[in-house]
Image 1: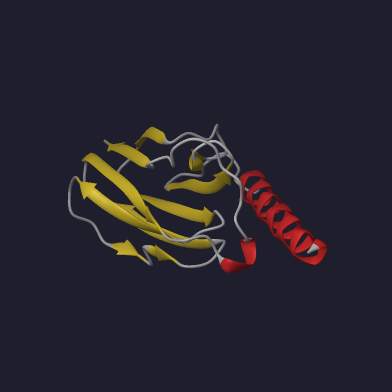
Image 2: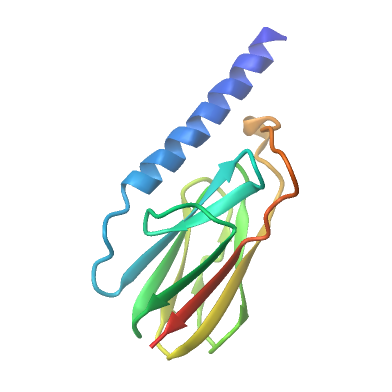
Length: 145
């Protein structure tokens, strides 16, 4: 019984460490790049952050045309990045099936792009991380000029 508890605690610690590393590795954006990181959290299950800022369920960002948007999944569950509206674009590897997986979108047209994710089940090695409240529905609005 204690072994299972230790494994769950180790998995949770690993997830927190991966989130911290991903967040700390994000510096100020260079021209043409932007990063959004998804992490696990107790309240709401998951949230995302733009370029190392605060984590929220809904983000709104402004970018210049030609920017490559990278989404990093540091959560304890897989996520699939889904465009819900806006100019057409090509998502590269939208199904992020493991921790640190990335999805990319090059935003070449001006307009308002809207994204969400479809979350999968927690990874088995992560056990059942505790959460409170309803799971957040992640929403990202990107305005490109």
